[in-house]
Length: 254
Image 1 (cartoon, rainbow, N blue to C red):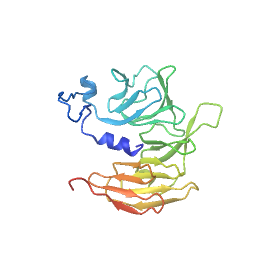
Image 2 (image 1 turned 45 degrees about the vertical axis):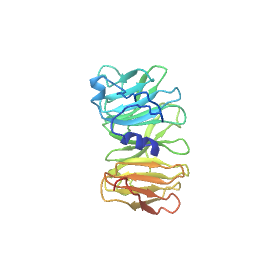
Image 3 (image 1 turned 120 degrees about the vertical axis):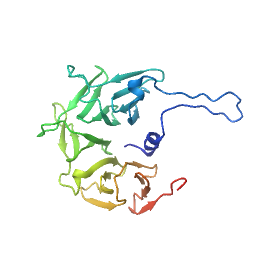
Image 4 (image 1 turned 135 degrees about the vertical axis):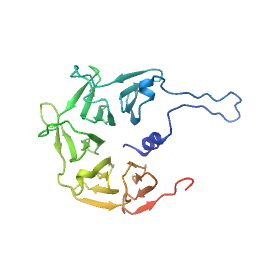
């Protein structure tokens, strides 16, 4: 997950646009963003916008690029090495260098706009590409992601050859349970897990586990002031970025 605004956007029931003007007698116009059955039948998993204004939408059946009027669909094609490694999109990241990263159910992909194709980032020492369930960019520009059931990885771009994925701070407590990630401007990395805890990784490499809830974390995101919002199925919490104190937030209608 990226910022809180995106998390809230994802939580909206359905995708539609409407215009309401106070005192306007013109009927409100609503409608579906997409009409194609193969698109509308999908679950939307993540959203991001690039510098050219395209809206990229991850779904369980492919990656959509929406230009405001029409869309392109990218999927895995068995005979095309430049296609996505998997059509099931789990996370998206548009980084500070203008690059689009795509986490799929079978590997991490980097989009090449010049060739309109995708590069698969290999996981060294693994005979699989990995289930990529979290993507974010650290304050220094390092791309960091979660390989499900394993832990944290970063993209090493220091060599002259192709970039590669390398393990990042291995053997963290409960790292096989990690499921969401958010990097803050002060250098901390917040990681949620399947057990309901938030892991705080400090710039010096030390870490702290904060027991928040007792169920699966649905997502985490940052407020403008740097505080962390933690979403569960039925609860929302805020963690103060300075004190790491926890507050349970009131849910509308709760």
